[in-house]
Image (cartoon, rainbow, N blue to C red; front, side, top):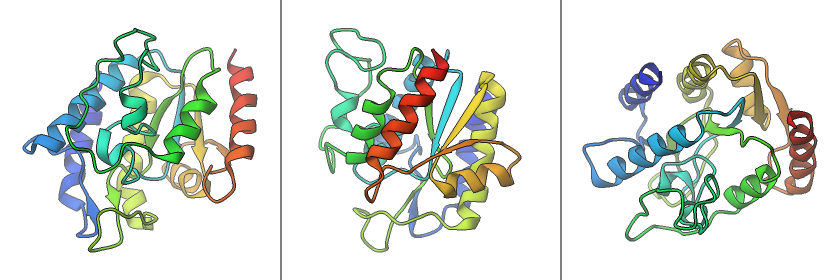
Length: 209
C-alpha cells in the first residue's frame, strides 16, 4: 500500500542539497534505524483519517528518531503514546542521540492526545535542512525543497485514504495547495504560537469525534 510512498522517499536522496540531510538511508546504521521507526510508525497509524503536515524535521526530533514530531522522549515513552502498551510502541531507540527532547514534538503530541483517532504526522519536506556547516541547527526549507517533498504528502493522502489534511504553518499550507491538496491551516507552535496551535487542534479533535 505504501510502496510508492517509500519509493518517492528514496528518490528524494538524489535531490538533497549540501545543507540538508537525507534521513532514511538504510545503508547507514542511523538511517536504517530511522527508516525502521518510520515503517513502524506508519504501521501503527494505518487507521488515521487526518494528516497533520509540518515543515521539516528538527535536529532534536525526527532527525534523531525518524518519526515526525517525535523526539526520543516520545519515542521511548512508557506506556507507548500510540498503542498504550506498557513496554512502549516498539520503536528502536538511538544509542547516543544528539538530543533527547524537542519542544515542538512535545507540543504537537500533547495537542493530539485527546483526539479519538490520532492524526498521522508528516513533514512537507522530509529532509533535515540545517545552517551549514552545523547539523545541530535548523533552517526553513526553501521553495524548491518543499516542491520536491510535497508529492510524498500527496501520496500518503492517496494511499491511506486520508479525509482531512491539516497544515502546520503557512509554508506547509502553500506547498500543499501548489500540489493540489486543500488543507486546513493551523498556527505553527514555534515563536509564541503554542497556545493558539493547541486551541485550534483541540477544536479539530472535537470535530473528529
